[in-house]
Length: 117
Image (cartoon, rainbow, N blue to C red):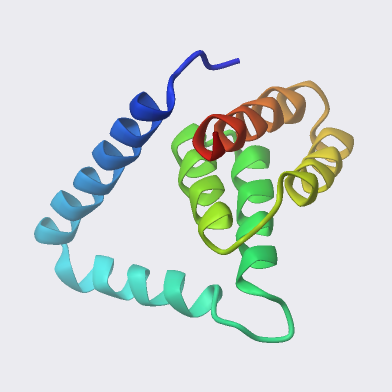
């Protein structure tokens, strides 16, 4: 489990965003399109943006993408997802992903707890 502080997690998230911006400068058409997809995917619909971000956390956990876990956990918090909701989604990750799912699920819960303090 990560021992990173809230400041360190925010710094890491800032680095991820800077890397995306650099890729956006190198490939503006692709990254503008990708950002449009990201925004469209979490728009209010029959599912709330918070639930959609929780699904994104689950997919990031399943894929084992730590930066994605952090990014989408922050977005889920931003959209009002609760710790209990995240924990329920992460339980499904453990069911479907076994040990690796449990490892990344624990990271997501830790990120939530660290950032919401």
